[in-house]
Length: 125
Image (cartoon, rainbow, N blue to C red):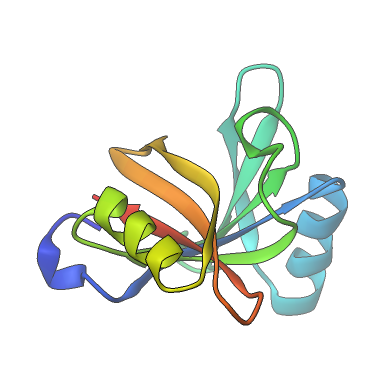
């Protein structure tokens, strides 16, 4: 997610759960993903990778640290041009900002809930 040609695309998907190791192992067994540890200091989250070539396809994260306030389950990250403007538009159009815009992986993100109750992250490279 490095340029505005990606705006509107789903750029990433991950999940935040209490038992990241168990869920990691579940998806390794069920879909064949491998994983790479992602150091979070005192623990690791997981980048799930394709079995051949190691391309990262998703993340499985512990519900602690910076992820403690994120909703559980799969969370898509939609690329936007301006995360602050998109967060304001969310509120103005009947949605709710669950996690205010903040820094993440070379950009900024927030988490929103739409009027139907679904959650998504918005990511600005």
